[in-house]
Length: 208
Image (tube, rainbow, N blue to C red; front, side, top):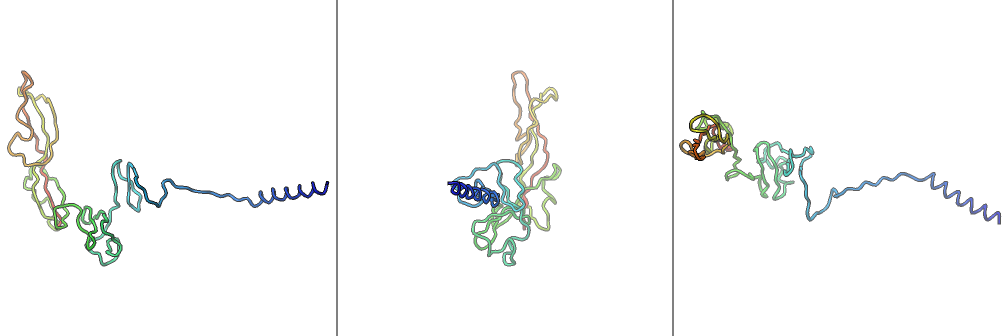
């Protein structure tokens, strides 16, 4: 009887010691959501598609990492190579200063005014209504004069007391004074006249 008790005690002691001697530490890392997978719906305040992981400046935006080089050169390898591009891919080109999309044969502008043009606005001062020397003559062409922009205010006709304003108005070809600020407003026994200050002119420049 004593031999049986000693035998089983030895077995149990051996198992316990073996477990303590060979027990290792196992760490399990899980991700939610998983880094790879398909999702029916994904919601985020901010998203970035970039190797540098720089997040957008505020919620409600998506950031694409700016890509250097010439999107029109697709046969020299690199990030614009036709061999790695898939139809529908969108990227931000620092050279074109805008979005480009791969249509299957070339990177075309995702914005602008046709023929793959990249266009954007440049503002000038109130003394330059004709947009002279606003666009870079070596790489850009003046496409259109978008008109002046500035601020509207309302003043009491008998003095300079401001009732409303200044309120900014967007670029446009508004015509003669005082449009787009109106003429005057009758506040009972007080008349107020509208006034505008032209801050500058807006010009549409397109890449050659």
